[in-house]
Length: 402
Image 1: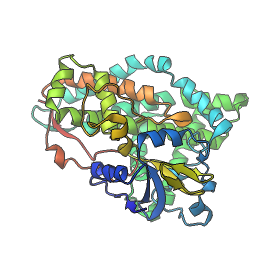
Image 2: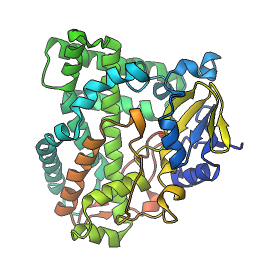
Image 3: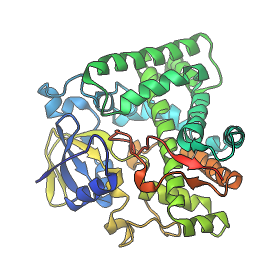
Image 4: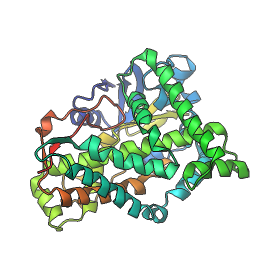
């Protein structure tokens, strides 16, 4: 099996995803830092593995971890070993940790956030409209970033004063370019910041999910302080990064497909189709780290060996022709059916999927209603990916609002 090295600079994600798919449903890959693992790259096999009880989140199953081959200053250590939370456990422990979060993020409860999301969106658009006419704007920094960060922070009870520090630390947390000597301190700083937030909520509880997690722990649901802190960190990280990418990628897709942009702006095609097709075609999450095989597992005509690590390559899955047909490589907002798994599948499916869809469903139509003449300020070919193996993210999105 030929090993495919994932580019730490993410210069050509589409090309890399195509090579992974061509390697078969199970590809042997090398993560930045020379760490070896396997990737599932086809839709059907991914659905199978994501519900296979032999594939677990317990890092102690990983042969390389047992042999001491994974250094604590590996830039991706925070994603491979983020501490005890619903992301890193299975079975009964996973259900216990996930239940409160899932209850807070049901479709019905998320819908109650709509009015607040609409108000935040309007405020962001007002700020954009007040800029000097003709000025180039970084739509990611000025619009796509503040909305999900404000929404998830309000949900979790995080003070806006902590946003700059969170942004700085998460930039390092996700980046493959963080110098190894800075990784341990970055991880310690993240832990300290979230511990401070939890301690503050323990002293002054509010109507937020962090306070609910603390109250549940005190009422006998057996969440430890570590689990509360790590759950808070997980939800904040996943809850804003995915939505930023979804909004940005949707705008780029529409701007590079003008006929389809006309269809959605005229009301011929609903915005829901834009969101679902973007999730499939240019998914916010390129690769999810990391699961481990408790025994040999057959994947197509290959075998994932016992004790080896597995990542899920969502960027490759979304354009799998076996699932989406011969036009899988095309952006098509009229695609039906559109059965992707961009938010995962099985017991670890993202509990924040409904919230991310709602935010994009409010933000995108409002943006284009206010600025129907919006244009990219540079050719799409010049947009630069950030050096993040797990997130399909851009450095910036320069636009002219018109």
